[in-house]
Amino acid sequence: MSAVRRLVVEADGGSRGNPGPAGYGAVVIDAATGETLAEAAEYIGVATNNVAEYRGLIAGLTAAKALFPDAGAAGPDLEVHVRMDSKLVVEQMSGRWKIKHPDMKPLAARAAAILPPSSVTYEWIPRAQNKHADRLANEAMDAGRDGRQWEASASTAELDAPARTPLPDRGPPGDAVAGAAKARAALAAARGGSDAGTLFEVDAGAADEAEASASEEPEPTDVTAAPQVGWAAAPDLGAPATFVLLRHGETLLTPEKRFSGSGGTDPELSAVGRDQAARAAAHFAALGTVQEIVSSPLRRCRETAAAVADRLGLDVRIEDGLRETDFGAWEGLTFGEVRERYGDDLTTWLADPEAAPTGGGESFAEVAERVAAARDRLTARYAGRTILAVTHVTPIKTLVRLALEAPAQAMFRMELSAASISTVAYYGDGNASVRLLNDTSHLR
Image 1 (cartoon, rainbow, N blue to C red):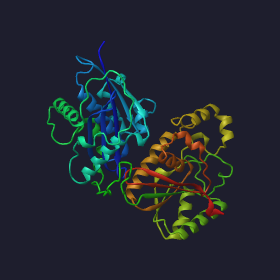
Image 2: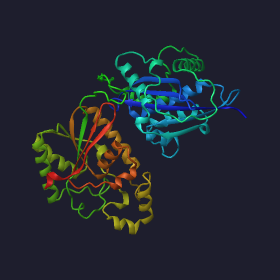
Image 3: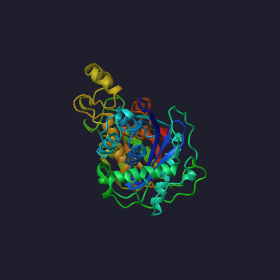
Image 4: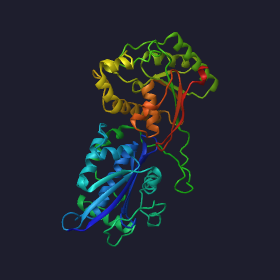
């Protein structure tokens, strides 16, 4: 029986702006001893967090294969356990989540083709347990900011590495720089090119095709980070883009709790809803913090946004990505009526975020994709500013649960009243902080 080489790959990616200046980091670790065998990192220009995370995975798997290029043939079998704090990448590569975003599909396919799928397993870990790869990603982004290439350093290879449980069947370990050089040379030979430049410059092909849209965006902006005190300390990324999320005021359908999405009658505000909008306007005028206003294209949001804009003297920008879910045949019905008419479909919808309402409505997964795209556009456009986003129940709950990295079912555990205020801050490294949820104190 052939010997088995067991490796751990930890990978991460980040974007200071999402999309913004981005980079990835990956480390290959001997599973038995916890020793670092190779590190990989690269600044990749303007990209999103998810693209950077996938690029980190690709680099880590490429490094593992390059260290043992004869594995499974003349040499030992290779087992690789991938650990990442990206729930999206782990679930998609494990086959539990579908890959719908066009930028992710070629990256996932490239990652899956590096090693036999049967030899790779995936595990989600908290961010605090992924410090090594996170540090490498930040080093790569810092290098790109300074106009230089990232270089491996043996002196920092094991800093803050989390404790790992050794596994059996391990030969003599290598060190980080020697292992990285071996992996780099093997990769360069396979590509027929030089090993000069960044350590693990992932081959172009599908990965670069996936980022073609990023090349049309503005050049990376200079994001200056203050020195860190320990690896756990966050850099000073400046003022966040702060989303003040205002649910529209009531319509005649709201108190009856009827499905009212983007595929229905597009109702106007009721008298109660107009009063709520006026109270919200007075609240924001007293605060004096809102600098920009965006709104869903639906009438009830435009009317609510207009009330605030008139009070503050601001314009309203329409953002189609903030519209409510299309509830298909359920539009205008109560939950009980849907249960009576479309019981099986409702049960499936409640259990599966990929399931759509009867009659061609939108699934929660589809809504999350367009809401996340709108979020990324707005955070890039309004970095460092406070924007009022007037929208609906599903987009607000989606933004909150994405910020918390919570599953789609968490949306059913949130209360969101008409004209309520929720606040999420988005920082330059792509992280978010939920500051408020369902505040209605301004309506009392």
